[in-house]
Length: 263
Image (cartoon, rainbow, N blue to C red; front, top):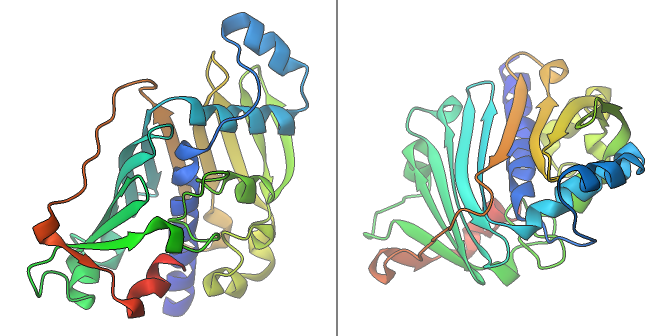
């Protein structure tokens, strides 16, 4: 039973990382605002409309918040055009005070582990709180990959949608088959859940400007304690400043830890 709970928690963590990353997607397509944009969107099929709403997140800086049944919480800011982001994820399910702070500045990715994860990785043993890795060395399917053409892995997420329909003028609901997503299907915990991972319900909503502002994945069917992963996007256009940590606190990520980033 304990192993199954850990498997569910692991899948939920991967999903949380993948979904919250949607805030840095490169945008394509036309512009439009207000009633005109809504009228144009209404002519699209629901899947195309949801895809367009997700892509619009690449046009401006924003704030991102996510909660997974209170066990994992995430908050941060991102500016996709400037290529910077700062994300802090707290994971008390792995021990009180356990967290990961990630900063991306250009092609540099910095990570700091606190709590039980930090202790396990020997964080701070040499006075270096941060680990650095060249973003180009992060695998394409990694939750930490921010590649120019699909930095958030949104294409991978959309490839897992098995059905979507409208809910009112600005809402959507549907199901995801996580086994079809390259971002999730390599997770052994997911494989252990079998068919339960092939029809995960989700809901989403866009604002008057056609931007995705809410995304909720209902993981309840995967097992006890999974709950819902609710992500919101807000404060569009607010200036975002992300700085690299002081050089005196940074070490290169040891090669034996590369699997952590590329998982």
